[in-house]
Length: 405
Picture 1 (tube, rainbow, N blue to C red):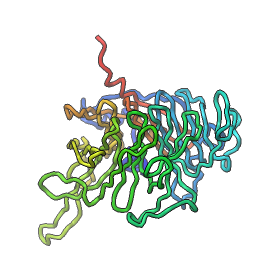
Picture 2: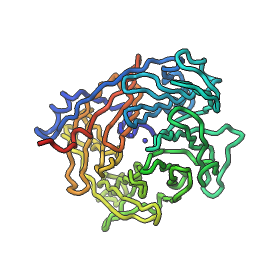
Picture 3: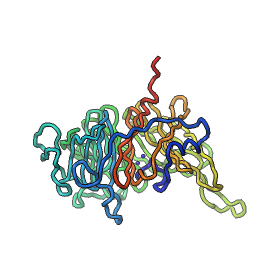
Picture 4: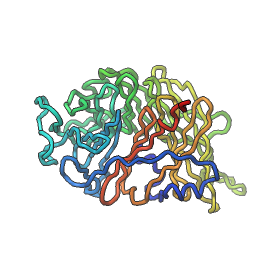
C-alpha cells in the first residue's frame, strides 16, 4: 500500500465510486466485495483523536499507519507521537502516548511504563515518530520509531544513517524491548519501508539503502533468523531481452520463510532515424519469491496487465501495485485506472487466474489514506476527509470462503 500510499498509483488520481468504475470497465470483468464502514475518528489532541494535517509542509510528513488483527485496529500517528487500539465499533481500548506532545487522557487511566493497572489504560512512552506497525500472532506490537539525534549512527559501508528501531509492546501498550539489525537491542536500522507479521509471532523488517534493500527476519523472541541484502544492480531479469528493473515493493510471505519482490520492467525506446534513446516503455511485471535462509529466488510469477480503456493516445497505462499475500497464498494487486476507478485483482497462485474487484472510494476520502491486508484476506483502510477519518474494510475472506451446500 508502502512511500506511502502504495495502493494509490498517484496521490492526485481521482478515485470514482463503484458505479462509475463498473460503467467504465468491460462488461462482466468486475466483481464486488461490499465495503463496510466501521467507525470514524475526529481530528485533535484528545486521546481518541488523530493529528493528520498540522505537520509543517517544509518537513517530510509523519506516517500514520493501520494494522488489524482479530477485529482489533491498531493505529500509529506520527505527528502526535502515539499508538492507539480500537475495537471494530470504535471504542478506544489502549493508548501509548508521548507525554511531551499529548495531554493526559480523560477516558483512560494514565500509567508510566512498569506500573500496574486494570481495564483500559494509557501508558506514557517517549515516542518520537511512530510509523510502520505490525501485530504478531502472539499479540506483540511491532512499531517503527526514530532515535533522537544523539543516538543515531552512520553506516559507512552502505552510506546511510542508522536511526530507526522497532519497538515491541504488549497488546495493552506495555513496553517490552526493541529490535535492531542483530535482534534485541541491536544496531539501528536504515529507513524502514515496512514491517510485516509472520507465522509464529515473529516479524520481517524491510529497510532501504542507497543501492538497494535490507530484509531482516526475526522470531517471536526477537532473535535474528536471517538478514539479506538486495542490490538494485542485481535484481532478477526475465530471460531474453535486457530490461530496466524497478523493484516496487517487498512483502513477507505469511509463513515467515520467504519474501515476495514485485518488480516492474521497462525497455528503452530508440529513435529509428538517429538510433538515440528516446525514453522507456513499460514491458511487464513479475513477482519473485525469495527464500530468506538461502537468499535465493525459488518462484517467479508473471503478473497480468491492468485492463483499461485507452481513450487518450499516448497515455501512460496503469500498472498493478502489490498489496500483499494472504495465508492461503492469494496475491492482492491494486490499480488506479485512467478514469480514476480503483480496483483490486486477486491472483490465485495455483491457477494464475485473477479476479477483479471494484472498491468504491470517494474523492474527498483521499486527503490521506493507508491500507492493511490481514493474513485472512481482510483489506482494511483508514480514509481521511478534511473533517474526519473513516475506518473501513472489505471482507475478501468471505468472498473466498467455501460455499456451504
